[in-house]
Image (cartoon, rainbow, N blue to C red; front, side, top):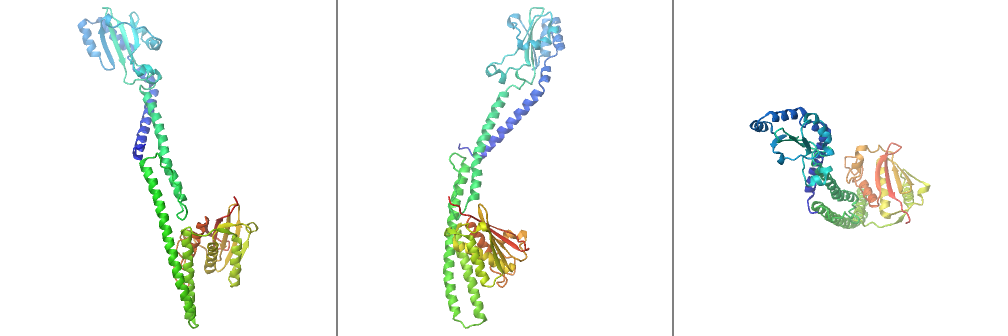
Length: 448
């Protein structure tokens, strides 16, 4: 099991090619089986050889043997005591029938050439070749004419090529190799599935076992586990640092706000107060996002419907163009989450709708698994090709970057991070009024 993955793949490919080659060769032999049988010496040729041997003198017989003898047709003339006749077996009876008219009047025998060894032990797999036969014909002078007929294409009793058993063994080995390859690649598929489940703000994902896999796969899984641990530690450290900086800067911003309050009334004072308020809001977003990234959000049972109603009432009291609809089946539905984070999700979506869409229409629905908060506006909507980018930090559809026409581009990015920290999703669609629609789906709480 210490063989490398590349070596295993190489062996698998080679064995597969070998099996395909053997199967193709077997198909060729089976197709040409009849032609191979016809490749034996014709009866007329055997009759001519016999007649020549009968008519020739001893010296001429030697010349005839030397002239005719080939690897496929071997001719010998032996004394009778060196070439005894063999009894005819049913196996060669049909083959001998075609030569009976030629050999009539002569004593002869026909036999299949023996091979021995494994071919005799497993005749139907490694069987003797039916097209390798030997004639022994008695001549008038008392000698024996021995004619060995062989064809280059040897087949077994079943019409399959000799050695086809090796092909069967190779096929079994190939199947075993495929099973091993499937077993070796299974951890990679499980690793890919585990990678999709990784949440650096949560607990480490359990990776596949690396007990008896190939060294490369074992090293990959172990390195991935170390990478997961390091990334989680780096993320938490970064978020903790960001949270600490945001907290300290917010303290200085609050002090600055108190000092600005002491300035005399005027446009400069109001603009300074507005800028400090925006700064504090930005720091609050960064602080709560850092908590979400570090997995430090608190958890309690909350009813999203009540949070939405409170937000709508507060905005209406401030004169905003906002309304809300709560479905009956969503009023008593609870989610497990952080109250401040959920309020920030609702507030950021409402701010976005009022700032860019001139109005905010909120609705809350629920089904068996999720609670859905929908925020529609009356703006120009979000083009399909810009929706994914709009959820990234510091991305705004308004490209001037002016604070007079929008925020810093963090509102929706903060919403997405907070929603995902609660196990939910944020999607962008089209509102019935022609504006943009933002849909927040949160998993509802079920009593176990």
